[in-house]
Length: 205
Image 1: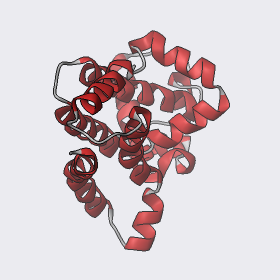
Image 2: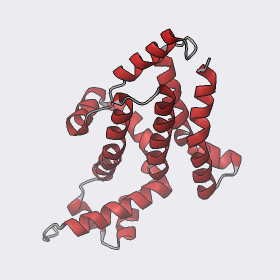
Image 3: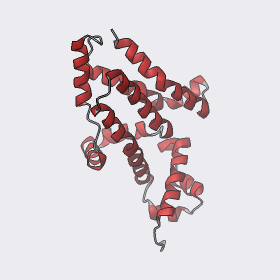
Image 4: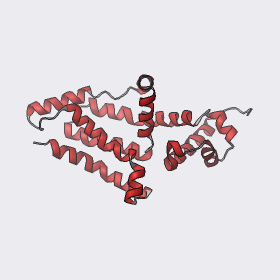
């Protein structure tokens, strides 16, 4: 058994190494040995700090969610015009996903495995984004005649799907379209503008 006092700098070093390995190999492809090698420590020490790959990944996910969810909540609850919200939503969501492209797969796996426990954990930590005010704003804009008649929930699903799907299908895009990592990141930077433009053009009267 490793007899060593845990320290924050070592944990941060391991987390930084794990991010790099998850980014290059994904959650399924990453191994604890890969993370230990990247951090420059032995595997026993890695297991002392983090019992499993899933526990380590969960910590990284929570850090990313803590960056994203409060921003999305702020957008949903702010007084910004609807089109500005759509633009900010795409920008914030894609920005976090570019740095953590493995997160959508992890979220879907957790939702399918233990949906109630997963959402409860997220909500207790920093509040899961509540789109209620955003959906009401869409309804108001429909009544005012500024946008076409559309089911508000369908619009929200379109926003989420267009932001998330490229990361879910990243391996397919890279393999079939010949996109390298840098090219994919550049493509997603462009998508921050393309997604809201496409959505706004489709609903603007």
